[in-house]
Image (cartoon, rainbow, N blue to C red; front, side, top):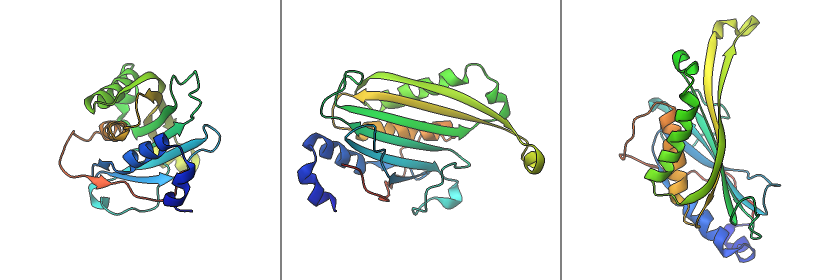
Length: 205
């Protein structure tokens, strides 16, 4: 069923939030698509997946890769009209971001805290209104063996976070998440050039 049909059965606040997210424009280094939303976390949900692209691949919307060489992420909007006490509101945002690290940064004890501060700074820079933020930052260090020995050692930073937006104007939250992905991938801040979110699969609700 199309959104225009199902919107009659969906709370207006969720429709407004969903439309705000779909109208966001992001940097050309990001390939962003709607993906299937989780089914058991809330009555209504929307999910996005993003890859950080090398310059030669920017533009177009190919099938999403779950583990981009340059970085990847997820953005999930949950909506429960009952406003769960743990959320402190009817909406809750969950995000995931990961990117490879240089080996020397992988052993930096402050890197996890830096990643969290980047997320908070990115949201505040976009004037996203939110509260009840929580999350974890994890450094993953891997070593290849056997047929993977040639891959050598690798380090990734993974950030998982959630927060409660104060209203349904959620474009700033998506923009902040996109800025975080670019920061983790080592891309400089820029306001030049944007790319629209690619429509891939519909939302739930």
